[in-house]
Image (tube, rainbow, N blue to C red; front, side, top):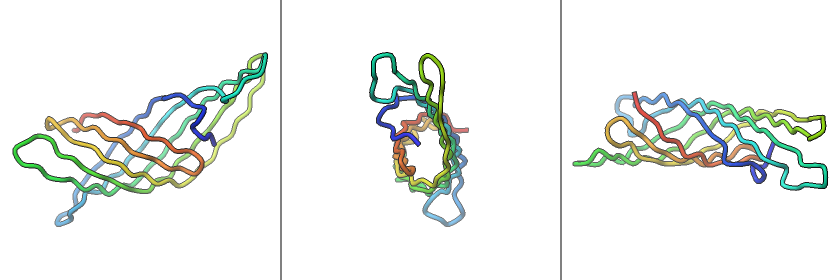
Length: 143
């Protein structure tokens, strides 16, 4: 797996299926996740500048606690959970050749965010997955 030090910002997509069991103070979430990053190996030699592509797909279960506010459309929340993530890396060498690999690992995520204007949400999650850490900033619309 990649360490994240040599990768660009990339992009991430996440869906969240959220429900609050009756009488519980927290919501439960099921979050499928996809991210793609690319970059270089962090070093170059004359004639050797390999490119890295990293893809991460996973599913996580989160518990979410919302701090209810009155008189405003903004509700902040915190969340934490565990997930199973599959990462694959591919390294292309200029002039021909490539190598890569993939791995599946459990990960931990912690984060927080806000729901606002009735249908919008923004959050950040710090994901710690084996040798790869990432902190996606996610903005979305709620249905």
